[in-house]
Length: 173
Image (cartoon, rainbow, N blue to C red; front, side):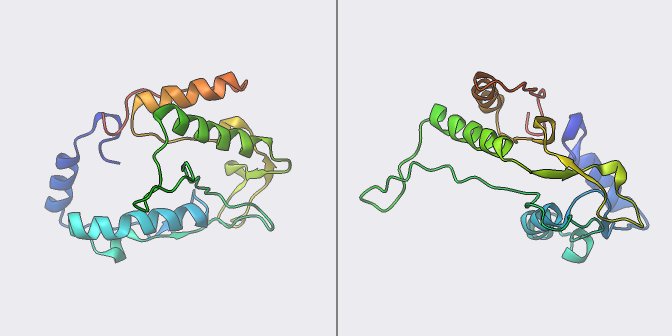
């Protein structure tokens, strides 16, 4: 995340190492528990192994609570041909096929009736749930490793009638 928008990760680490006191955030006020849990699972061990940051400094809790009966705030999609090779591995999909499967998953999500999201401005310290509204295309983000992948997914979504915005070079550029 420190590489976001051109910052220098080494500079951030050096500043943190030189700080007399380091305080860690223990609570996310913005994200729902599903997303906080996913981030904890993905990054706590990596931060400990590679950066020497103990889990107590990186694992956080979520203040927000999902509305009753709501869908998960994080969904994953298995991208697979479903064809098993003789060696037991699954046959790889071609580049274009992968991007089409991802676009299909986004279109499927947007076609579901009654999917709700929380209006962030309605969440407060006193109301960790907030008010809900219908899901819109603006609520969806697809993270990719390359601009080529982003462009192909965007074209697949545009061909289905969705307005798409692709951000410029990101963290790994």
